[in-house]
Length: 289
Image (cartoon, rainbow, N blue to C red):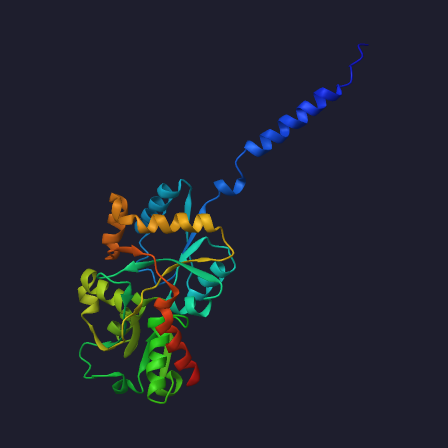
């Protein structure tokens, strides 16, 4: 029987060196995983085609697959982002100020030339109300308990006149979507509602019959537009790459198509200060209980 010679020391060391070099040269598994991008009901449309366009655009800029993650509530998406389980998310200004110490602003949309929007309190078109005070005793539709325009602004307005939603309205409910607030008021399921002014404006173009059944009773001062944010627990290099993909949207045909659908002019680098007015609203609403 032929005896197999033991491996020499140099041969063993050579194999170990080759294995080490291979391990260093091999790309890390994380570089191949999908980049996760969260969307809340701040997002104008749940159209699957538009979602796929966003995934494709950012994927082409990053050279990595991108997966859009959607949840029903703002809190679910914000919690995932704060925990570092999403690489970035398009969130509302109110969750941002609630978690300012854990999040960074990546980019803020430009709407009608500025990174600003308004909150609207709406009622049915045939309603004679001329201000929020005329809506006392209504059944009122809110968007989400963590929405700035869909809840917080109205709460702060009511605080200014010495009351709170639970005392002012006969009943209120959450629709978990600004489009759903408009639908509820238009259909008479609610007598009034609190809604994102950007969503109301854009829907007035694409669904004029629906939005035409409602009217603006009171509008807020301009505030910081809902931003894209990233967790400070995440990869800063990836965050910068996502920011660049957003900022360069107007430079590519697919990016311009997305912006046209969203009725946005583009994105700019935003700062935390842009949301200071929302933080003030939050303190006013909390002070009134």
